[in-house]
Image 1 (cartoon, rainbow, N blue to C red):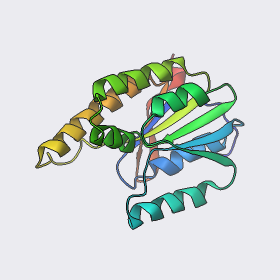
Image 2: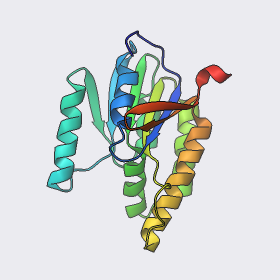
Image 3: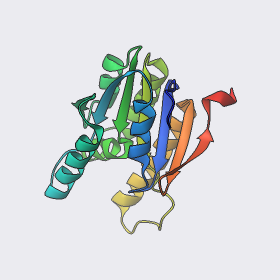
Image 4: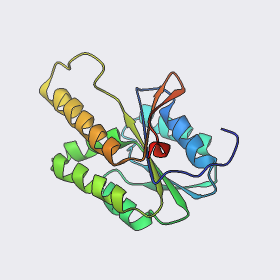
Length: 180
């Protein structure tokens, strides 16, 4: 990605753990001329997660404004998605986990998020894990999470102008804003 590009209004970047999806999403935003806002949904509840967060921040550098928002993602997007901005949300599945653990109405919250994406004035790049390709989890909570994550990804993909699956660092275009 050498040349500057214009971002679609909504881009969903999917991939498995450590697939390169976050790095790819960052590159999409970096080649645009928009102001960069990184919306972090992770919480650093342990040393390993704190280290992941540190590495992500170091990789992005100082050109990004970071907003830590593990719960009110929809409110943040409604407030901050303005013309001339590119917001990168990393990641939807961590946000879903946070909301699930808070006993939120996940169907309502994902629906509200999808509506906010449709109403947004800036460009939004969302990162999410593709979690349904593995074995069936052995406990109810994990199966519930997998099912909600799959449904969320479908709903956000339907709203998105562009959907990209990253595997081994290689992007595969699933839906393009140029398709009409």
